[in-house]
Structures are given as structure tokens and as C-alpha cells.
Length: 321
Ligand SMILES: [Zn+2]
Image (cartoon, rainbow, N blue to C red; front, side, top):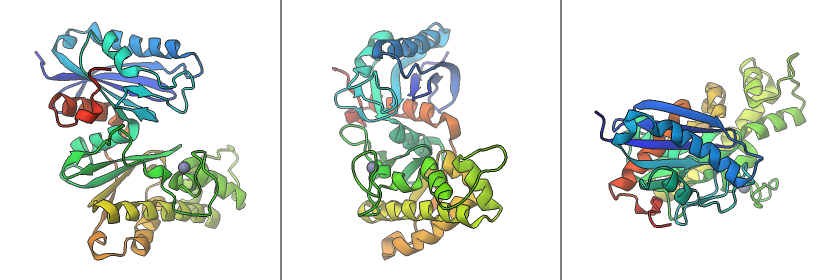
């Protein structure tokens, strides 16, 4: 009989994944629904409730003591609300109180998806054993989170470490967030693909213009594709170096679809870090690919719930809202 389980929810713009996770991070049961992202808020919530209902009919539910949520952001963990960019029906949506009701009153912890991925990498992945780490997701957007002094550092609202919206190009292109030259505006998958197309790269007969297609072209030596990844690597390096200089991280872990480009990204990234991470105390910074893969959101949400339950991350627990 398992008695140390948490229910994890990973809420994104395309799917709502749920799981029961044990104390060593193993997933014992899964449930999933597509996100009805263009519907009204209550309809989206019903999909969350359906996932929880499917988990709670299991005999394992009796051993479940908390719920952890990793959600697309922005989130406000202090208020227990979420406003995911890709789910317009949810603006300041009271997700924590609604999930608590659906989960029979269990305590609920909420973090942003970047912080959840960071919790997963620190618990089970490439950041394991490091007391100071920056973990990043580079895909459609660029998100991240921090581990400081051996603990997840979600910040007051659950968004700390959001490296995608640090400006690394003061007069650069406008970012949807309102600033200029953000890391995300240069290094996200869509921006890698856009820059390659603008500079004359053409997709193959399949018409695939994704960053993965640009990565394949770069691997084959296409100079424009190589250059687009080098520019993305430069932006990531500048953001990582700034973070390392501020808080002395020992490792930067990079996951998400763009990290799947492998050496096409990591070789120029390590080279660019030598240009930007120049002070003695940041020169030994390690860069590593993420290990937790597609379950990072669920495992991280479970980690956040466990931290909250043990009183170590009170800011991410909104037990009264
Ligand atoms: Zn921005």
C-alpha cells in the first residue's frame, strides 16, 4: 500500500496531463485530456476535473496526500491563480481553489512550468546534486527556474528564473512581452526558424519550417541554418552568463525541443559562454542537456507538492485561497 503519493497536474496549451507519483518520483498512474484552450474558463476547468476524477477512482488515491500543479504561465502562486497566455479563458483563474475542491480538500501547490521542470531536473535529472542551478526550457518559448542553496527558488509568485524575458539585445526586436531583445525573441524555436528563412534558408520538399528542420540543415552544414543556431546560442549564453554572475549557478540545464538539436546548439553555446561568462567565479559553469524529458512537468509538479507539504516552500502553497 502506497501512502506517500502526490497527484501531479501538468497544464499546458495543448494537453492537461495528470499522474499519481510516489516518493521517489515514479509515475504509478496517468490520465490525460486535450486542453480545450479556445473554450471558456469553466470548460477548461472541466477537463482538469476529468483528469482528477480519473486518478481519484484508483485505489491508489487513498494514499495521496497533496496535489502539485505545474502550469503554463504567467501564474501567481501567492494568489493561487493562473493566466496562461495560450488559454485565453483563464485570466486570474482561481485554479488552486478549484483543484482543491475537485481533489476533496487536499493541499494544493502551484508553480509555473519552468519552475516545475527545474524541480524535476534537480530531483531526478541533470541538476541532481547541484546546490545552485539554472534550468531552462527552450521550445516555442523560453522558460526557466532556479535552484539556490540546494532549494527550489520559485519566488513570491512562482515565476523566478524566467530567463526567456531577460533582454540581451538592448535595441533588439520588440518581444511580445513589451521589452526588446529578449532571450526568447532570439532563441526560441519559432525565432530560430524565422531568422533562417529571412536569411535565405529554404525547407526541403516536405515544407517543414520548424526549428528541428533548421537543425537538420545545420547538421548538414547549411551556413544560414548554422548561423541561426549560433545566434540563438549567443543569446542563451548571454542570459546564462548574466544569471551565473548574479547568483553563482554551477550548472545550466537546457531542455525543450530546441535542446534536441544537440551539438548544433550546445557546441556554439559552450563557445559563446566563453565570451560572456568571463569572471573567475563563472568560468567553471557546466552546461548540460535536461534528462527528465516529457515527464518533467509531472515529476516537477509532484516535487513542488512534496516541498510544500514539508513546509520548505511555503510561497508556492496557497492553502487558504
Ligand atoms: Zn520578452
